Image (cartoon, rainbow, N blue to C red):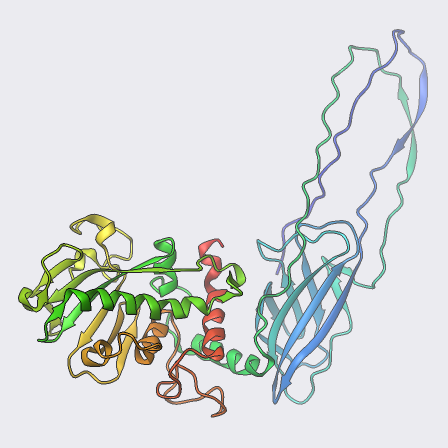
Length: 433
């Protein structure tokens, strides 16, 4: 791994010519060489959690020298079996026992006497000793500061011929260097290992985990914090205007529960930008228009457009069909597009979910419109945000249930919350936040 050459800002030199005589004598001038940057650093390496064959490491770097605008931290594991599996707050790489953590675009600046924390999870075989030597930008971290002294050299120059006084160049003012912030990845210690196992499982089983661009995250950012739904009413029952409005209220409430998992004391976790997400139902699809007992134009209505043996909302308006955001074929344009379908099927047991939306039983949903947690819907919404199913394994080893393990919990748990946050921290860089 290599990093770009780092140069300190140059100091503007002012030229001042004095005198009215022409001097032809030779003079001896002392030339002051520019002072070099003071360097120095210290590192606090901690194993914050350890389990059989695995561990979590925390590295706190203190810059004791002059401010820096980018960094790479190097160290070597004492044991050849120690391997980093994933990391955060830095770009991590490993070759043999040698490890390098490189600054990211948002945390490269470290002011003098300021700290930054980075972390990782790793594996080992029999031993897990701590590294003992660290380097910052290829200079050893000894806990001391090295300040090279400026020196002078003597040169022989001819005195210059006087000329007009040149205007002094302004001396640039250095911009303040932002202070490093604490690592936001701070789940409860009991969840560190299972969360790492979940992400490793997703990396090994998802065909395009990082490249896929239609997660709920992508939909929400594309709409600047709002989500539109269209209801696929796969039932012969009639729906009143009051029921129609109650469906939107229920969707809003359940969707917000996942959004609340991204907040700490009302503030977005790890730069999460949305506190309250507005959910709007923009359309209903039915076999027979007479099933919808309203005459207003509050929503678009799609009649007898059958796909998958069920009423389909108009494809020109669906994000699933137009992930480029081109809704030029949608009557009403982008304002009438839908991001998700809520597919309500009569007699359907269980559920299904993905980037296209959620499918659950019509009777189940309509009878639970005022229920605090519509747990099947919450589970399927989790899939829209990329969260996995857990039919064949349990990262918590039976110690607790959670909404994404179907049937084990009826509400979003702390583990679900941190799985959601883990997805965000791995994808957030694509949104420039």
